[in-house]
Length: 110
Image (cartoon, rainbow, N blue to C red; front, side, top):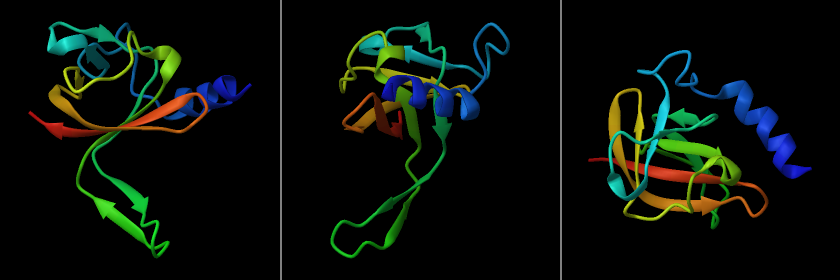
């Protein structure tokens, strides 16, 4: 059930699919290998806001993030994988599972 609910949210805010817009799609580069696998649904944002666990205050970051269902990834994310979104390739800096069906991946350019 959680996977289906997350799927609705991801689908609503997702980047375009490769069949509709190859340049705008999100690609998963397992072990950094081009050309990568287009992800069917992924939410990409150039910056994000997190909450400081100590104070509860919002903390903004300039790191881009990728939100995706684990079932949409070809493999579990590792530091060797890369993501190409909006024509830019990013390396995986941190992986934050939501504990149910999704993951937020913190990215860095390069």
